[in-house]
Amino acid sequence: MENGKQLAEKICALLSSKKAEDILIIDVAEKTTLCDYFVIASGKNTTQVKALCDHVEEKLSETGLEPRRTEGTREGRWGVLDYGDVIVHVFNDESRLFYHLERLWQEGENTVAYKD
Image 1 (cartoon, rainbow, N blue to C red):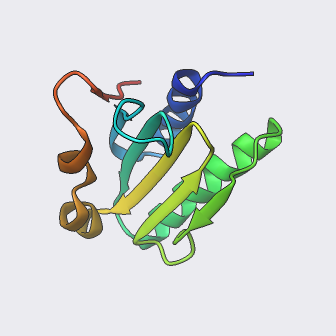
Image 2 (cartoon, rainbow, N blue to C red):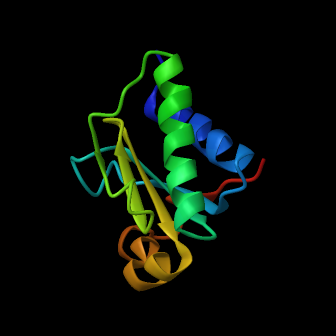
């Protein structure tokens, strides 16, 4: 079984393989009891956002890992996949700019930009 950090990195790799942009891992363990990590990524449009969410869900499902909850994945503006220790947020560009989750949760050293 993977720890939260390993799962977050695996999710980043899955998102990157489908051309997600501006992928971040934010360690929120000291800030909330919801989860340990947020993974935040962008898709170019609603179709790509849906495809990114579907890809992560499908590939993790193949390993026996199912999300606890999903929200907004069909609309393609802001998809959320809750994997317990890791919550994945996939935005289209407009929604990401509007909600700007990074601003709310990052404080210096707790944010890592994913590079494949």
